[in-house]
Image 1 (cartoon, rainbow, N blue to C red):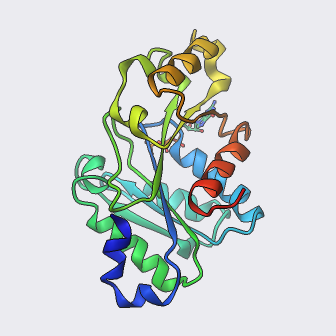
Image 2: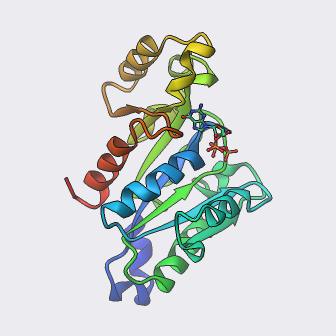
Image 3: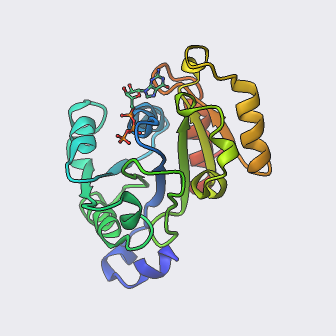
Length: 217
Ligand SMILES: Nc1nc2c(ncn2[C@@H]2O[C@H](COP(=O)(O)OP(=O)(O)OP(=O)(O)O)[C@@H](O)[C@H]2O)c(=O)[nH]1
């Protein structure tokens, strides 16, 4: 587990370790858009925040967040997976753990680090050596039948975010049955429907993160 890793680092014993939250999901489902919406919402509530992004062979998502003006650019670190994104969030998360440790060393008061996975497939999951809690983001435009496919990411995540709900009428998806099926395959574990561009559902996602890892309600 994650804290066993940190106990080996004497420097991290000096301060409370930051909570680490993963955000994974298929390519283009809206992971970066969700982070862009969450940053101001979490900062408004006084959370001391940093972000680690993962891309295949670029630092595109990190550059996008650094340029956004939403967060101090030095609080955004990039990991280049160089391979299937899940390899560096599940099989060997060493690079991501090191990126998180570096942020904690540079910003000793940091309370929460968001780890954005590179876009992957429905089987993608996070190692609990890396994160305390994780979100899986799917989007309505990917098809109303995604919950039925029961990918491990969707089934095992702590919170399922169903994003791009605004697009449902344009892509022939009925939102209510899609959400009902997602609830059913997840045995009623949490699901939040969002429009990351307009902010619908973002407060609820922030509430869920704060309650789960910072114990704030
Ligand atoms: N209409 C609509 N578009 C959205 C929403 N969320 C994200 N988008 C758009 O969807 C596209 C992909 O969003 P990103 O945030 O880049 O998705 P991502 O999951 O980070 O993508 P990768 O990192 O490439 O896997 C962008 O053009 C966003 O503007 C939403 O809720 N509604």
